[in-house]
Image (cartoon, helix red, strand yellow):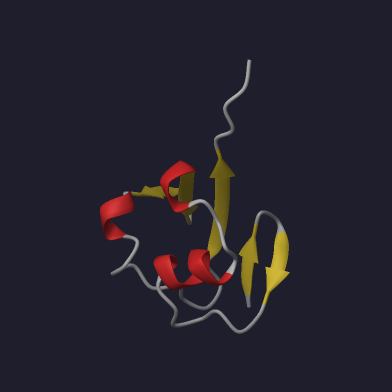
Length: 65
């Protein structure tokens, strides 16, 4: 089981961060991903895999005025 923003997520173990975000149609250029307390650099999204018991935090930036 993986926790994403405090909610249980199944079926994602073994995916890369990039694949996970693409499946969610997340705005990759405007998102920060923290995995187990460590910020993952965008350049590493395609090589960083999600493991059992990971805790992910997804933070999106929204512009406005």
